[in-house]
Image 1: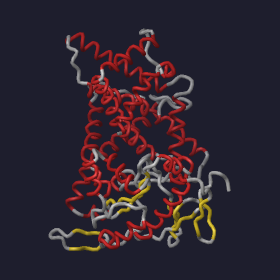
Image 2 (image 1 turned 90 degrees about the horizontal axis):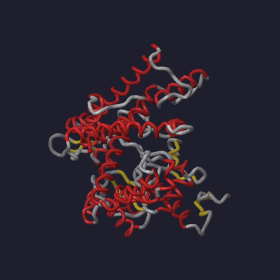
Image 3 (image 1 turned 90 degrees about the vertical axis):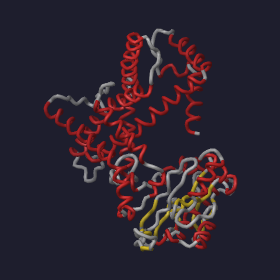
Length: 461
């Protein structure tokens, strides 16, 4: 057995391959506890040490281990029994039997998992987590307190769903890096999967996720080979937007500026240029229509909405809420598909010329589809439906997070003017104050890089 092996199987027992490795033992213990929690929650999952995965002997189906982060929670997949109905006063609420676990059964299940607070029927550990978050200054503090009490691997119940958390860097690295392929699949909440049908970067797993991830990384890297197309487009948009700001200051004589709409249009325009080679400006109705839909998605959804079961969609009040949450997402999806259809029409009419590797993400994807069709591939994961969802995920994920990160960085610099002045002086020394900063200047700007690193650490905490 090589040095990377974690466990071996002998006489139906899990043996630790390296007795001196705490991380290896913790990984094996995690596998045991996940298997136990699966069995107690209604599944009959058996740990297979050869593949480091959970196998359901009844269904002969392999369930991949999760993709852990620090800390992370993983819902153990179990078969859903048919719902039963209990009277809670009008209207009648349908609940699956495992939501009605008596406290004693939940207690036994909790003890057989990795350890954790005693779950409350129906609610699980959500009240405990909320209390600890208030007491410890946020969710990170709450998870740290649970780590101190129950160890680096512990169990929390979100409603009827047992989840295993890893709150240790070494164990997480062992799971995600050394055995990353075995932990690549993720649990996808129902509300995220409904408009995606198992496609895209968020809702896909297995081979389709691997193929699209590989293709997307390769495509974006190609934009950076030779001349850095991504950097060029970012700087071009930056100069256009801030030249307009300079003109506005000269015309009005006021230095007061609301950076939010400026950054929103700047980030949205950069993303759209990488996807469709089209820019937005401050008067773009299309952009602000898209932005309003993204804002609705972010503002309407809550953490509890991610714990929705399919049977809940039949409850009228809940169905109305989920329709309201998903409506802007479907609208955004329709807009992206319209953009794709317009691109195809432009190509057909000769208005848009395809380069060898494509000018943007859509070009590269259409070229990939044509290659697969030419090769008569029996199985292809590259379809127009998948492209639409990829574009949707890239747009949503990039717009809100990037804008928020930049704005919070500006606020931090304003609150610490001495840091801002040191950053400015370093940039002047490197560029001579006569050219824009470039990625090639990274080795010469240690203070700027340190400032960015600190900002990201503050944002994550």
